[in-house]
Every structure is written in structure tokens, then in C-alpha cells.
Amino acid sequence: MNTLKIKYTGSTSLIPAAEIIKNGGIVAFPTETVYGLGGNALDPLAAGKIYAAKGRPSDNPLIVHLAKAQDAGKYCYTNDLFYQIADAFMPGPLTVILPKKSNIPDSVTGGLDSVGIRVPSHKIANELIKLSGVPIAAPSANLSGKPSPTEFSHIEHDLDGRADALIDGGNCDFGVESTIIKLNGNEIILLRPGAVTAEMLSLFCDKLTIDKAVTEKFDGVPLAPGMKYRHYAPECPLTILEGSDEAVYEFLSCREKRGVICFDEDLPHILGKYVFSCGPIHDSLKQAQNLFSCLRKFDQIHDIDIIYARMPSKAGIGLAVFNRLIKASGFNIRKL
Ligand code: AMP
Ligand code: MG
Image (cartoon, rainbow, N blue to C red; front, side, top):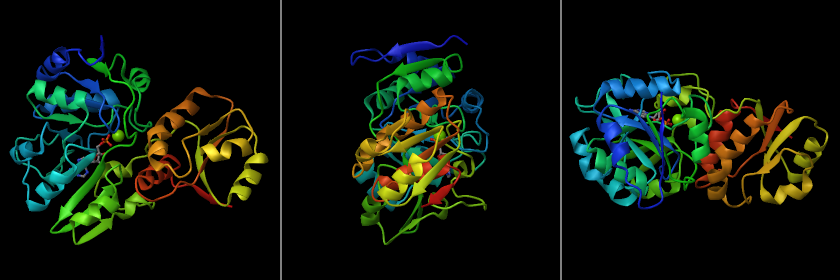
């Protein structure tokens, strides 16, 4: 497949990309979370192309992206809590799961009777939806199982020749995928943590429950089907280290052929060629922004056997960093 590449400079027209979507093609585009791979959400064949391009299992649903929250009622059954949350967080990095209407094809939702609705705040994403004139179904624009793409080079690596167009809009703002929630009466169930945090959402409901699959290995049927798949994983195995600074430095000093993901403050204390910081220890947003590109860097390095990552904070957007790291590690935590 010949892939059109569009470098967005601020005045670049997105009409060619919107035409591709209208005509049933698929386009990778930046959002404020990660890059997405989108097609017409009302066209079952477009969803099939997305699954094929990513190598994604077709029971792992796509998220439906809208230009404004007021459009949600066309595609799903909304309620008062949805609009309260939408007023606070949409456009923004939040997906809400709601019962779907029949115009959303089963292929988009992996056969589920619910649909994930998101209104991206990113200028390119929002304009692309408006110009296409249809809702855009999109998962993250990585090959299935790989770390999500947060830079143009990542989508070029994964999707050149597999998508009809790739839009270069620079680096993504948050670096982790959207927060996903389900509403149950006045309760919010957090299915995937992201930049709209549990702390922020708890102000809008009587009860906020964090689904078990966010923090623990889970063998049942997950509420968000994507959570059952191995995710975000670099090619090399990854272990999270939990322990004091001294214990971690001592442990790493005795290990050869290892890569390390740590914090800025650790850099003077950990020797070796493949030691990458994802940001300052108390800056979870920076860590979120850098995590996936750190993980991807290791796929270019062939003389390591294992990657060790320091345990991040679980507060605020830190919960999203922790969630992606434990999934990348296959829930492999070593206590020191
Ligand atoms: P991605 O953006 O690549 O992480 O993919 C979208 C993710 O959203 C899926 O893997 C699911 O975890 C979640 N999702 C989308 N639609 C639904 C739904 N109807 N019910 C539960 N989870 C959903
Ligand atoms: Mg994904």
C-alpha cells in the first residue's frame, strides 16, 4: 500500500486525510494522548482494515471519536452523569463506555453492546473528525501488543505501507492512552487509568471503583476487553524493581547485559550504556510523556537480556504509568 505522509505545520489542509476517511480508508493521526489509527466508525469495512493493519484481535473494541460531546446521543444512550462528566472533561483524554445504538457496527465494538466515546482536544484530531463528517473509530496506532505511539517516528515504523495516510503532528501531550470509565448509576468504574485521574473523577460521583485489572493480574473476563491482551511490551523481558534507592542501585550494579528505566535523580547512581530516565521522580506527567518512547528505544538495542524499571508513584497520572509498566512487564515485580 502506498502511504500518504502529511506533515502538519499549522496551516496544512487536512482535507485529503478527511477524504480518505470518508472513502473508507484509514489514517493515523496525533491526539493529546497517543497517535490513533482511524476510520469511519459507521463503516464496518473500515473497522476491519484497522484490525488488519494493526494485527489486532477483532474482539478488542475500538473507541469512537466525536468532534463534540453533544453528538454522543446519536450513537449511544447517554444519561445525566455522562453530561456532567462531559462538561468537565470533554474535549479531553477521557473515554466513557455507554450502551451503543444500532448505527455503530458490531465490528467496531468487538461484538459488545456498548461503545467507548471520546472527544479529543487535539487540534488535528478534532479538525479531522469535523472535516470527515463522520465519527472516527480508532485504537492506538501501534502494531498490536507494542508500546503505543507518542511520536511520528513510531507510527512511521509501525504503519508505513499499512495505512492510507500518516499525519505528523509532533509529540503527543500526555503520552498515555485515554482514561476509560464505565458508569453504573452514580458510580464511576475506572477501567483504564489516564490523564483524567481517579482523584479528578471522584469529585463527580458518590463512589469511584478502580477495576481490579488496573493493578492486578486478572484471569477472568475483563470489563475492558483490551486489558486481557499482553500490552505495551518491548521485545526484551521487563521486571519492575520495588525497593529503596540503595537496594535498587546495589542490585543493578551486579547485573550485566541489562537496560534500565529510571528517574532523573537515579542517573548519577546507575552505571551502564542503556540507562534511560523517563523524567523526574516527582513528575508523573513527564514520566507518562516519555514512558512509551523509553520502552521503544530498547527494541533498537540487541545486546541486553532484560530491562529493569523503577517502581513509579501511583498517585494522579502516576497510576497510568504504573498500569502500563506492569502490563509491559507481564505483572513481574521484584521486591528488593
Ligand atoms: P486502544 O485505544 O488501542 O487502547 O483501544 C481501545 C481500548 O478501549 C480497548 O482495548 C478496550 O480496552 C477499550 N474499549 C473500547 N470500547 C470498549 C467497550 N465498549 N467496553 C469496554 N472497553 C472498551
Ligand atoms: Mg492500544
